[in-house]
Structures are given as C-alpha cells and as structure tokens.
Length: 446
Image (cartoon, rainbow, N blue to C red; front, side):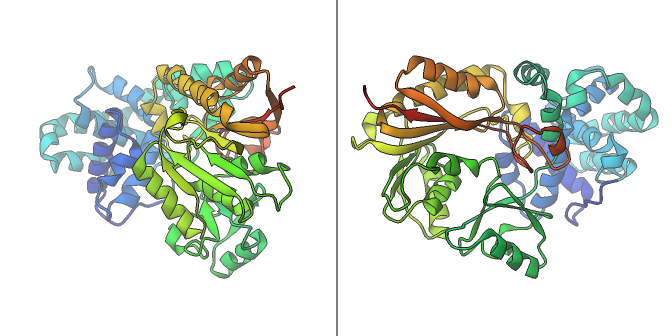
C-alpha cells in the first residue's frame, strides 16, 4: 500500500475531478491544461491521482473491457477507468480498493451528469472487487494492459531499442523525482547541497551540475530558488548547454549563440550561466506567451537575452545576417522521452505524429544550418526515444550536408530511474529522462 495520501478533501470530490481531467486528456487536451481547470485546493491531490491513473490506464481500459459489454459515454468511462487504474493493484493503490470503489460510486451520485450511471458503475466495480484475480489474469497478455502504453508505442520501441525496450517502458511508469540544476556561476553544488541539508532537505548529485531531491517540495520553499541559485531541470536536459559549449572557445571569448526553440527558457538560462558576460544569446519561440516565460525565468537568475517571438524556420523574418558561433536546436518532438514526468503524452500521441514532427525537425535543421559560421556548431536534440526523431534524423542530415561533421555526443539517452539504472550500464549514470543529442560541426569551406 502506498503511503501517499492526496490532499485532505473528500476523496469522491478528487475522483470526480480526476475523471473530468482524464476525459479531457482523451479528447486531446494536455494533462497540464486539464489540471489548470481544477480548483487550487484540489489540484495537488488530483494531480497525484491523475498521474497514477494515466500510468495504469492501459490495464484499466482492458479491465473495463472485461466488465462492460460496450464502452460507456466519455465521462462515466473516465470515472470507471480512474477507479480501476487506482484500485487494480492493492500493493500500489493510494487507498484501499474498497474505499476507492465506494468513493467512485459516491462521485457518480454527486455529479449530475453521472447520476443515471451510478448503478452501472457500482455494479462494474463491485464485480471487479469480487473477481479481481480472474479479471486481472484475463488482461495479463494484452500488450497495452501489460505495459500501459499504446500498442504501437510498444512495437516502435521494440524496433528502435530491441535490447532495452522493456527497461524504457518500466522506467516510463516510474514517477520522476524533482531534479535541480545548480547555477555554478554563483554557488558550488556542494555549498547549495549543504544549505539544503541545513534546512532539512536531503539530496544527491546527478550529472555535472544536478541535485536530485529525495522528496519533492514546492519550488517556493527551496532555498536559493528565488535568488536564481538553482532551477528545476532534468539531468538529461542539463546536458544540452554543457555539450554545446564544451571546448568551443577560450572562456573569455565573446560568443554569439542562438537557442532556437527556447521556451520556457531553462536551457537558455543554463547557456547564460556557462557563458561570460560579453557573449550574446538570442532566445526564440514561436509562441509570444511562452516568450514571456523565457523573460521571467531569465529575470529570476539575473540574466538577459534577446528574446524573439518568431518561427525559427522562417529565418528571413527575424535573422539579421550575423552568423552564430553556436546554435541549440531543441526541436519540437513527440516528447516520448519525458513520459515519466508527463504520463498523458503516451495517450495523446498518435503514431502518425512521428513522421509529421520528423518533417518539422528536418526543415529546422535545413533552415538553421546556414546561420552557423564555419567552424561553429549546432546541437540537435529532442526529448524523444524514437530513432526517427534522433539518430535517423542526424544521420540523414550529415549524409546530405558535406560541410557537416558529427562530433562525439551522447546519442540516444534512455529514461531511467534509480531503480532501473543498474541495468543500463551504457546510459548516463543516475536518474534522467530520455533524450537525443547530436553535435554537428560546420567544416570550413575547402
């Protein structure tokens, strides 16, 4: 039994909100947007329950298929699947299964649009409690039920990572910890870790500048956050600025750097923390509102950049003709590497999205490469584990651009938690999301 207990509000009310959020995710709304509509007093508990439900949704849908001859309407189905997802495995249930069932039925009774379905939900869930072992066994061989990912996603991983697909799926179903990047231009990692310990916050290092909190806390309660001494960022994402700038030039040289898809600004901030004050950084995003987030994040760390709201691929609309020493292209992708943190992604994506996004990535590479000066470099990265958005993309680019040379870089990082890390000896050490990195150097004209 999990010792996590969501917020002290009635459980039926939380389950009601979780079902409504799940129904929205199934309609294509992101989990983040769905949760924004939840009252603040409910949100922490609802988010915890929603994330757990999303991580077990494949099993829940298979169980629902055993219990109901036809798929119910969206909202009652979301409530039924929520209860099944949370209750099917008693060892990891946030509450006793009987309590979850009772409160799910109560949620139906107290929701006007669900009252007519309350008896149906009650019958399904009571049968589940009576026949749990047999029903679970009947769904064990279903791929989506077993791995809690769409079947196409599982097959794609089997194709792309034949030796590690199971490790990736297991890691995806683990909740990611709260990982921080220390602003080492202002404080050492050891000093900040010691300060945290003095405030009762336990952590351990990851990567070159990261700290993983043993227990998550509100960012506002973290010593050093408001002062810009640290920022929330996964260890895999922290590699971007480090790879791009490693050994690029003497530390006192002024560099002209572009962060082409920058929002919300975490990687831009990291670039500025590693660069000297004479360097210039342009941070771009196609969404003006997301550009405001970049500005806010940079203000917190006491740095500034030229922030531009524009489509990076439409270079004629924003580029002034000055070549860049370094370009960071964190390209739009399926986000298949960060489903530990965003468990809704696996249910929002369609397999056809991969080719559509790969085409966008290919065009961004094509349009931004001419902006790199000879001898400069471009770091192509995605938070994806699919090879079409990573290795295949970079390999094709190098084959078609004779002035591009692939420098040593990390390639595909597979997501891993501390519980799975020992099995993945060729991955980065520690806890991190899935990512892809390819560092491309522009050869001088011969």
